[in-house]
Structure formats: structure tokens, C-alpha cells
Amino acid sequence: MSKETVFLVVTSAFVLSGEIAEMGEIVEVTDTEARDFLRRGMARVATADDGIPDDEPEAETDVDDDTDADGNAPKLTKSQEKAAAKLAADSK
Image 1 (spheres, rainbow, N blue to C red):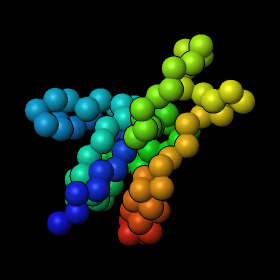
Image 2 (image 1 turned 45 degrees about the vertical axis):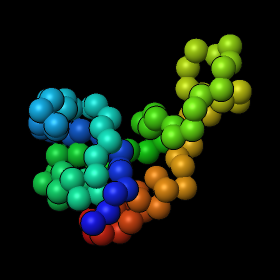
Image 3 (image 1 turned 60 degrees about the vertical axis):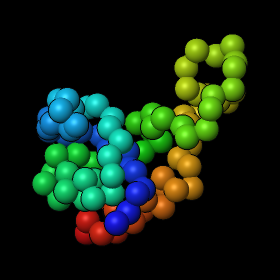
């Protein structure tokens, strides 16, 4: 049983842990849940462009958004990249 989590963008509202996940919201779910939501077309794998939260604590900066000094969106961690690639391959 996998303990990895995956970030998804909700494409059709569903209930997750007793709360309604609305369309466009980014949610963190287990690998098993992700496969189910993807299979049923209720979500898609989130990308860095969607603004996935970073696993590492944020350094204090003068910038109020999630972009780096060059204006780039946050990058996925290695584990998030692997999970997203695996899910994408498995959903084909």
C-alpha cells in the first residue's frame, strides 16, 4: 500500500474527507485516491503551473507570491514528479 501523495486539480466537485472539493481547487490525495479520481474523470494531475504547494518550508522573502526571483512558478519535488509521471503513464 502506497503512502505517497499526489496533487490533483478538481475538474468535477467531489467529497474528500468530509469536505466538498470544488472545481479548480488543488487537493492532496493518496496514490490510490488519485487513481480513482483520474479514472472517473473527476480530476487531473496538477502541474507546477497550477501552483502546487512546495514540500520545503518557504524562505522569508520580500515577494508576496509563489514565484522565484525570475518570476518562475514553483517546481515539483522529485517525489511529486515521479508520482505524476507514474499516474500519467498508468492512466493511458
